[in-house]
Amino acid sequence: MAVKKYMRRGTSKFYFVPTIAAESMIPTRTELNAGTEFSEYIAAMDGWTVTNQEIETPNMADTYDSTIPGSDKADSSSFTFYEDEQTATLEQTFAKGTTGYVVILRKGDVPANSSMDVFPIRVASLSPQYTADNEAAKFMATCSITSRPLQGAAVPAAGTDEVQTVTITGSPTGGTYTLTFSGQTTSAIAYNATASAVQSALEALSNIASGDVTCGGGPHPGTPITVTFGGGAYDGEDVPQMTASGSFTGGTSPTVAVSTTTPGG
Image (cartoon, rainbow, N blue to C red; front, side):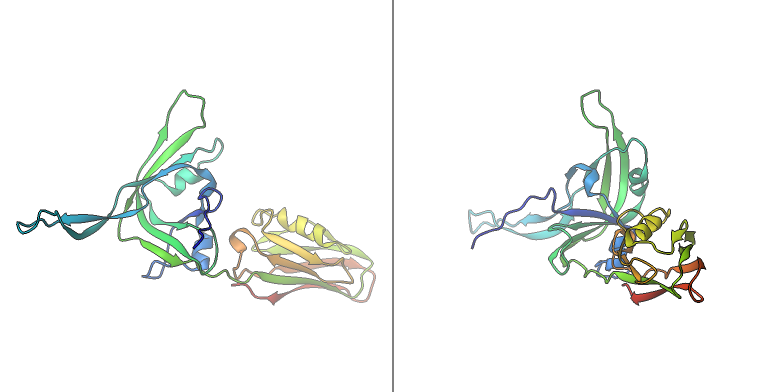
């Protein structure tokens, strides 16, 4: 049978997940999304495997040195990370003494594929590496594997992306409206805004990054605009519904409203 070979780099994904509720150590999609993907920071890695400590059982009846399976053990494992010049986010994630789970999706984020390994860990040490050589700054996180890892589990199913719809009624001929998401309010959005204008206004919020939402439909006021929460921490999640406030002119009692047309999760 032909083997479709592949390269770990560019395929495998690495997450630090602080909490997994299930005793099976299989994270839900929500728990995985709440973790930190650190694949792009990895410069090198060592360990992250389980070996069996075989027991030698020779006997006088045979010159063959037989063995039997012994206890399993995960050797000390580590990541060498590229150090970010401006932030210490990853250093805080892997601070000495931190406990959690390193989740490795060996064949990428392919739901239901049996290629997920989960290692319960405690960070034993976090050490910057100093060198005068011509190379990027790095630091090393050494992790103790605190209990038996889970290997070859199914990648959790992707959740449904939430879709919310912004609708203007009453046919206004002027004015603006705003959208509020989780306590953050957009700048004024024109009554006749396009989908791209609404997306730009949302992505300017501190709690929505570029790529977190995708807007379609429109333009206003004649056609509703849909907002799909399909990226970052909102991917496949049940997110708070936005609220809208309008200040319109013209038309007949114009209003703006938001409805959840496809619940996430």
